[in-house]
Image: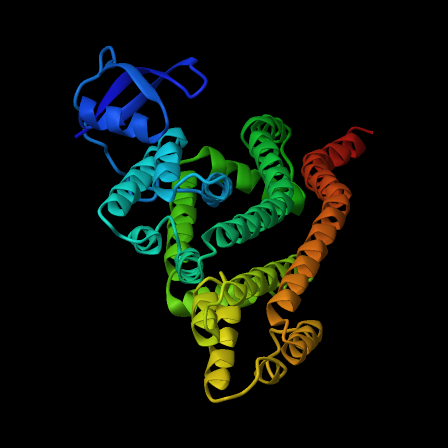
Length: 407
């Protein structure tokens, strides 16, 4: 049960600042404002605001994007590095974030810190927002007394991963948009244009060519009740597919398939390897033990094929093997990665080598995505022209026969 309050405060420079804050009561608002470094002037319930219950819809209102976590981590690292206490930094950021679910999590973390809980333990109570990698690195920073450096490292890695995901999604967005445009154009032609020609052909009589009959059959399906069955079939198929890829077997098959296509496969593979090497590098540099780091990396790999390979490497490392030896026997790890890991182990700079490999693969993905965009653009335009041209030719084929008969 929360209320929205309007407040007026003075900042450290004496300037008047106004805003809104959600809390259970006025004393709670006053306490939070003081923790944020403000001097409260007035606090009152917002006009028209009353008690309200936050409705949480799983998968929608309780979702925190990776970009939001990345921005929060960068701001958090900057505040801690500037000398602000962890508790006060969390309080300030909780009042700034726009995502209400994220803000509620940060307020809970702040309360846990006030009750004496460590930062890693408080973050660990919110696994939907802060994953095992995040919590483990913070815990390592607390033990080593380098929480500010760990937060900077986390922020940098999160920003790289957000940018990498943005580029990969950007490469997929253009072809999806073009395919949707083609689908809309074809549907309009089938529903509006083809029926007009169908009436014309019926009035003229005669046997229609096969391509024309196919177009008319598709048009009849789209304008009849049978299109409902087609839509239901497609929706059910999509739902079943999404449910299937959530299973262990389905996820493995789907992840393996994503790494096979000639163009998109290497992008997916390199993006997964970049995520793996960056994660492992961050954990090792933070002082997390090797076996624990491999455990966390396997769960954070984002690809079941890479995860299985990391689990295999962990098993061999536990038996006393080096990192490079089991990796050299697994196809998922390229020779470049294996050689860099081997050099890193020999020189005692494995974390640095892994970070370099991650940066290399990020560069490779960037280059591939740029090339992919320039290649796909003319290719998809040709596909659009071929599809629309095929429909037009199919509709005009009977007209040539009728002209011959007239002559």
